[in-house]
Length: 356
Image 1 (cartoon, rainbow, N blue to C red):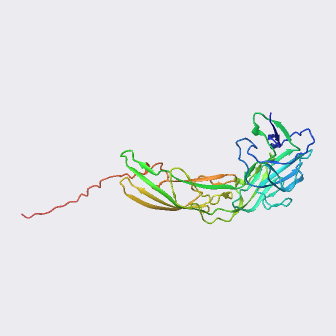
Image 2: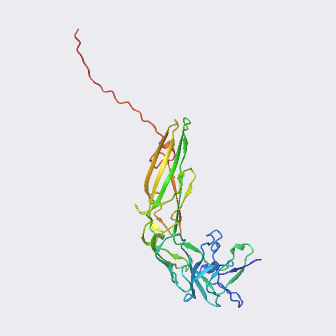
Image 3: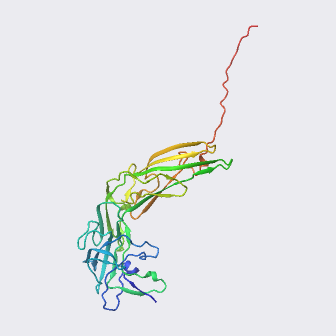
């Protein structure tokens, strides 16, 4: 039978007390930021560098104040000070990532209390901003044996991070690149090249206040998971470094912004500017070439009304390289057909007098 150290298993996560080991060994407080905090399939391994943590003894007395936690000898632990589990009571932990500030000095991001996490006038950059569910653990640690599912072991305070921002990326594809007319075997080919795809108008600064839910561990978020008081706007950012020839398989293009402020999409604000070239080889061997340039509201190209917290949003832009109709499924729907008719004869009376 294998033994595993368990600090705050599911009972701890649910806010109930964990039983104590019957010994006098004082164990150091460490953190568990693996992907096993709820189920084996939930989440991924934390890999965002040092994070900060706050803690309260018995929900009242300050225990840790913006302590830096980092990986040291395969253990996530506080760097500047060492902490041990007390003999009685419980400790409540709130962590955020990445770490800002130094020990015992409140960092600029975020402001943390026992029941709230607040980001004020935060400007989005290239950093993945995260906050963790609140963890309440009884004094000392539990020890369990689990021979069937060894992955269930924990080795520190359960720290499950969630993303405070949204993440944005784009893919492009052509719905079709050639078509064969089944009636006569005639083949038409399209070569679609995206020369430019620029995004602009994203809000970059905003505020977010999270308050503790009744379950004592998760956070009540702003309405619609959208940050408040949005301001600023990104200038046009090019997503394509070199022209992209489309295939029927979606291709990644540069994310440019990466992390974005959670925000509501509006007409004329968040935009996508496209410059596309279409080369059509007709079934009779002739070639025509067209340029398609357009500015689209991101609000209109999908049913998504907002970019929300903890969402990884991937836009796949599908190009139909013929006709401007948007509701056809194949080129067959927009095949050039004819509607022949014959104009009525114009009846004209004509008479002549012939002198014989």
